Amino acid sequence: GAGVSQTPSNKVTEKGKYVELRCDPISGHTALYWYRQSLGQGPEFLIYFQGTGAADDSGLPNDRFFAVRPEGSVSTLKIQRTERGDSAVYLCASSLSSGADTQYFGPGTRLTVL
Amino acid sequence: KQEVTQIPAALSVPEGENLVLNCSFTDSAIYNLQWFRQDPGKGLTSLLLIQSSQREQTSGRLNASLDKSSGRSTLYIAASQPGDSATYLCAVLDDKIIFGKGTRLHILP
Image 1 (tube, one colour):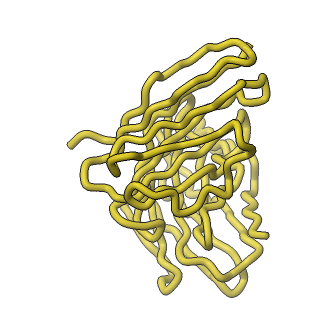
Image 2 (cartoon, chains in turn brown, red):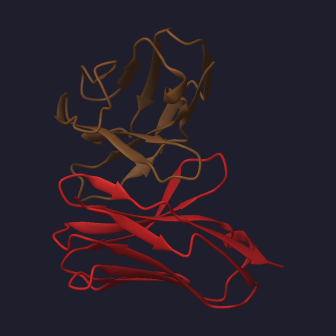
Image 3 (cartoon, chains in turn cyan, red):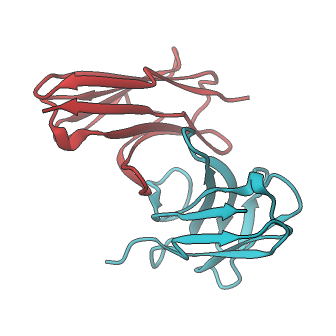
């Protein structure tokens, strides 16, 4: 079956612009996670959805970052007023029902803020 | 605050050798520990997941152990192959998922 997909694969934007990153989880997976990975680092947790609701958004760095999952499947990570420090690979993962289950990762979106 | 450390940061070994990658964590109150593989420019692939009640998991040439009391896990790779070259990450789940920085493994043909 299809795995986790993310679009776009690459996004280049200018400082101050707004961007949206999309994640399509594996069908039937209720848990969805967003991470940010900088070069040479492990993924850093951003937010965890259980169904439509954000069960844990404590990893979002500031109020410029926001994520939604309105129908409990596709999720969008939104970044306002982008800064150069936002440049990273944004990874999405899904799991069957909770963090205790195996997570399946998408290929990531590489965001570059000029 | 949970911290996950992976040693070594990088490792090169000749093909065919057995090897061990190490992961340590500071807070033993975890639900599970997961080992991932990441190829350059790619997402993560789950290798093994060990629940907190388990001590090890095996898949093919891979064996992962978990010692919660000492805050350690090891990933053992038997008979290494050039295709095993990748970055290996461990992650623990307590109230959120915390990753280590990974070990970059290079298998020399």
